[in-house]
Amino acid sequence: MKKTVVSIPDKLYFKIGEVSKITGVEPYILRYWESEFKLVKPYRTKSNQRLYRKKDVEAVLKIKKMLYEDKFTIAGAKRKLKDPTTDEKQLSLDFSQQKYQELIKDIKQELKDLRQMLVKTS
Image (cartoon, rainbow, N blue to C red; front, side):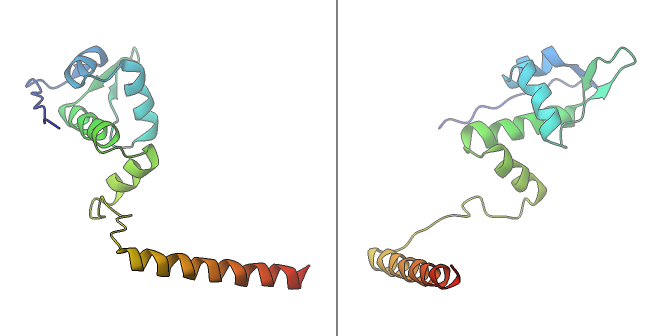
């Protein structure tokens, strides 16, 4: 996938429409992300207008990449942003065929054991 470089103008504050154009994210999604991600906290004027700082715009771009390109869920993106040292490929199951068969055998045995425990308690 081709990486697109987004240039953020050198300004102190951006209105929601400007952020939408810069990031390619609709305003209603930006408002939703504000409620989901602590990283995006635009300043509010007395008239309650949102003013995003450059760091907010960068955060939106980071979240967009995680959700749209890296295919994270909202919960997964939150976890990743909370602890950036975690590996992105947490569920990398690169086993050989024999390893899969052993894993399935172990799971079957555990299920049998659980069923026996449930039958004893009923």
